[in-house]
Image (cartoon, rainbow, N blue to C red; front, side, top):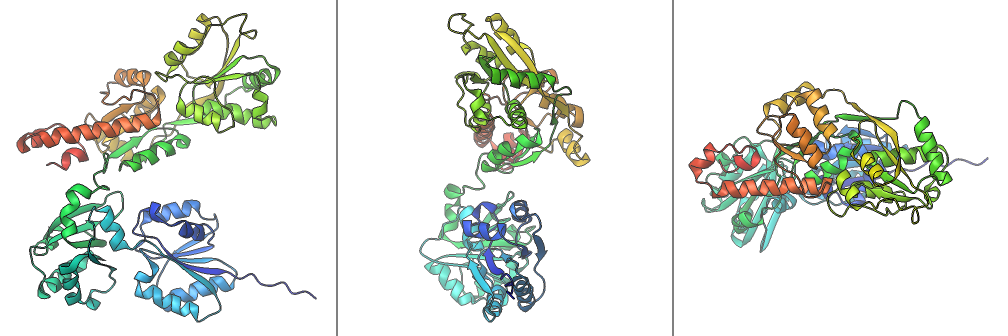
Length: 526
C-alpha cells in the first residue's frame, strides 16, 4: 500500500517596507500572492493591505497578529503543518522588530521550512520620502520600546552624522527629554513625518527644543529625523512636492477605464476618487453587430474605424463568440480616433493604419481620412462600430468623402447609479480639488447623478467636444490638453497645478490670503 505524503507548507516573514505598496520587493510580492494565510501587524497600512488582498488568492485568509511572539509563531507553524503557506507581514524590515526575531527563533526550533524576506526599514525609507538624506555616519532604527534607547549613543550619532527613528507619536516627548539630557543641542534641526510614504504624508521641521509642539496632532507611527540632512528638505523633498500632491481628484469614468487614469494621478501625488458615471451594456438588438462581423470576414469593408476602447472591446467580444481572431481582419484597414484606442487595437495583435497626428477627435480623423477613390478603393464601405449616443459628425463626414458607412451600435452607455451621499456632498460643496472629464457623456451623467461640481473645483476636459458640453452645463473649463488622451489630460492638470503654485509663491502674503485660488496648492502658502 502506497502512502500519500502530506504536503508541507512554508512560512515567510515578509517586510512590507515603510508603507508605500510600490516598495514591496518582488520576492515579498511572490510570497504574498502564494500565501494561504497572511497574519499582518497593525502597523501595516490599510492601503497596502488592500493592494495585497486584491492580488492574493481568492481563498486566502487575512488576520491581524495578536498576542505574544509565541502565539503568532504557533499560528504560522500550525498552518505550515497542515500544508498551507503562511506569511507574517510586518512593517519595515522583519529583523527590525524584536518580537519578530523571537518568532523566527521559535519557528527555527521546528522542522518547518521558513524564509525571511527583507523590507526597506521604516525609518530610512520615510526619511528618503521626506527628502532628508542621512549622510556621514548614520543611525536608523524602528523603535518598539523607547525605554530601551541608549540616548548617549543617539546623541553621539547626531554629532557624527544623521539620525532617523521610527517611533510612536506618543513617545516624542520622552525622546526630546532623553536627547536634551544626553547633551544634544536644543537648536539641532528636526523633522517629524507622519503617514510616511502614504497619500497624506506630511513633514514638519523644527528643532529639538520645539519638535513636540510642532508635531501636535500627529498620531500612530512617525519618523523623527535629526542632523544636517533636515536642512536639505527644501531642495530634496520630492514626495510631498509632486505637482498634484494632496489634491483630491474626481474621476468620473466607467469602472473599467478608471484604473489607468487613477494610476497616473497617483504618480503625480493626487488622491483619485473613482465615481462610475457610465455603465457599458450590449446593444438591445445584436443583429446589427452579427451582420457587421460577417461582413468583416466576407471582405465587405475597406475600413473599420474605432472611436473608443469600448468599441474595440465590443467587436473583439463578438469575434470571440464566433471563434474568430485577428487573422480574420486580413485586408481590412483600421483607423483609430486616438492613442488609447490604438493601444487597445494593438493589444489584439493588429497595427492601425491611421491615427490622427493632430487633434484626436472626429474632426481630426476626418482631416486625414482620404476621400473614396473608385480606382484605388474597389471596396467603398466603412464599418463604424460605436456607442448608441455617439454624435453624427464622423459618419456625415465620411459620407461627404464618398464612402458608404455602416453606422453600427456596438454597445450602449447607460447612466450609472448615484454615488454615496458623502461623495455627492463633496462634489457640490467643493470637497474635490479637481474633476477630469473624458467625454461629453461623463459630464452629463455626473451632473445627472451627483450634481454640478463646486465653482472652486478645477475642471479639466479631454477635448473640445467635452469642453462644449461642460460649458453648456455652466461649468468653467480650466484645463484642456493639446491632444485628447488620458496621459495628456493628467499631464495638463499637473502643469496647471505647477502654474498655480508659482503664481501663489510670487504673491505677497496678504494677497495670498485673499486669493480665490483654492485647493492644496493654495493652502500650502497660507
